[in-house]
Image 1: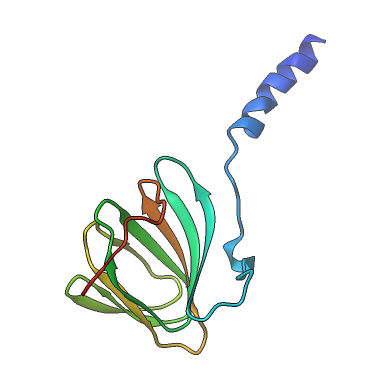
Image 2: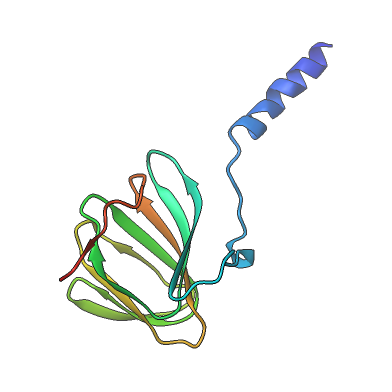
Length: 131
């Protein structure tokens, strides 16, 4: 009986503290969309993770209280962050500091698909569009 209890205690952390594992390559939009589709992956008080698809563009905006990390999964585009413009493609990773205007114009025939991590937790309210 003691052996069973010891084994259960050893296995318990694997179940209680295990991380969510999501294969983002297999995630597809669950509805039709015209330009931008966002799907939340995970969230806690420290950050919120999304998969975002963009067919055309993202208008210039900033997050006053959030930084954003982007990892490009598919597609290509022209990304402007502050006063710099870069070409992005699958495999690219970059960080957008809080309070920094950024925008995207898609240059590929397929949508740009990214993982976006907002920190701290993002409720969709900290988005200020550039005039």
